[in-house]
Length: 464
Ligand code: BGC
Image 1: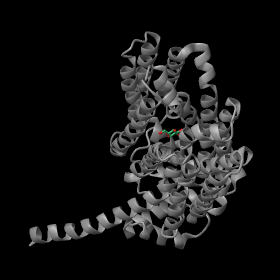
Image 2 (image 1 turned 180 degrees about the horizontal axis):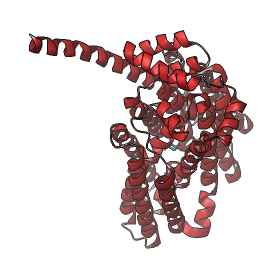
Image 3 (image 1 turned 60 degrees about the horizontal axis):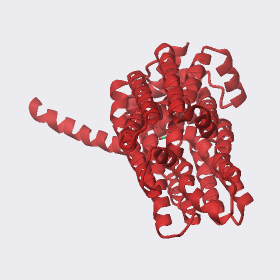
């Protein structure tokens, strides 16, 4: 009889748990539309710029400015995300940001002149700067511990899809001679989808609890598919950490971050933020066509095509990270990924220093290796850790400061790449990024803790 009942009962609970886990995946996917917007709006400019320069007769300084101005918006948005996220809650903040994306998409596609376009790109930048940290915080707070890495990584998958789709959309509208306006307007679609999706996903139990809404927090845990035992255990853990909650007072959170054991958490997160950019990823994401041309690509089309391949490899490798991150843990992936990136950068430098006719293919291969290593390490893991390293009461503040550091470093690297190439040539510039990988390795080895399999409350205890 036992043997008969066993499969029946476990079959029943498997279906229930499958339903629960598809629900939590759906919730994470809806939130990850924010990541898609982040990726799309950072990538779309690369193709649009070719038409903008013609239509508005831009000088190269004006061109550089319209590209980088959104990163300045990003830096400001990243800083604004923390107080907003604490005061309004994670869900309402995402709603506000989706509306900003919608406005930015329409405004930039209709911009009558250069000045309006600059303002529109600042608005879009505010949106992606803020959403970059808000989504990982949201997902990390609704995810069960054993799936947290994977679910937050979904955001990075969406981000890379956003970048790849933006390359595709640029190519499509370029083919049909429709210019830059529809390229910007297309971002309205995911913005609307996110706004609609927000109608069906809940506020996070941790934000609710830290604002005293215990009953709602409990109901939400049930909605998220936790069993009654899991929900009460999770609520107990949240209670223990949130009874000391600062109820969202952003300034107090900042003070606590700077003056307690949590200073180390901030150091780790900000360090990862800066290294994620200083290893040079966006010189490739933003300047790939230029790099391929320097490596001897036959035509502009060939280099745009090679760039699209980089975009696709980025998505596929990030999908691989989904599987790896909760299996192997954050530290091994960071250490391996950074080592491989360093080797690929060394190889790229060598290819450019001793360039031959066949270097183009070699450069493409080395870039693929670099992208795969980034996409399975620093790409998803920085955003994941920037959310999970901090206790609930300072999570929004901590991740917002880390995101601010990330956007600042992004701006610095993107704005100096071409100058560096002028001084050190392409080979020397890639070797410089390889040397930064070595510093990153030391940083990870000595300072970054493993967070795989630990609840957010256990991670908090680690810092005490
Ligand atoms: C980084 C972005 C980068 C992207 C590439 C993200 O994790 O923060 O700056 O463009 O990965 O996939």
